[in-house]
Length: 176
Image (cartoon, rainbow, N blue to C red; front, side, top):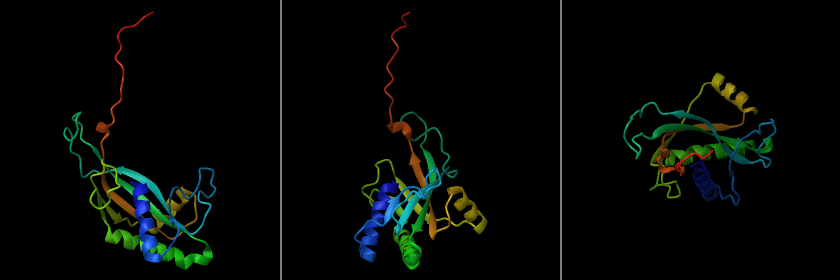
């Protein structure tokens, strides 16, 4: 799902701002060793920062072949503007563009984004607000200095492993 969203956002930026290069990169801001993950500045970096179970959809016993309901999850996605200091106004422009993009496209399903995986029924993208203390903790956890950013909560992504079937051979007997 996130690669599709990054591609659509790139297309939007190319049309809106006349960019000729991809401005959206899917990945981490910082590598595990603390070094910057993105070597090329002037990009919007899309990072998954949390996954949680959606407690509002707790139906059990229906919904899939094996009798187990799909798990409904929410994703928290960070859009960070990693731009050179001399391009700070551009960073703000692209963060504003990101907000405008999701304001115009808050619902994602197969009719609005045909490239979405068939197992994604419908999602809603909402800005997620956190206070300054939580924001400070988030950037400390990521291991990066703050950059202009916005966080979106992607509501109710259905995860159903019923479509993945393990082929486990039967045991005919034990030979010693």
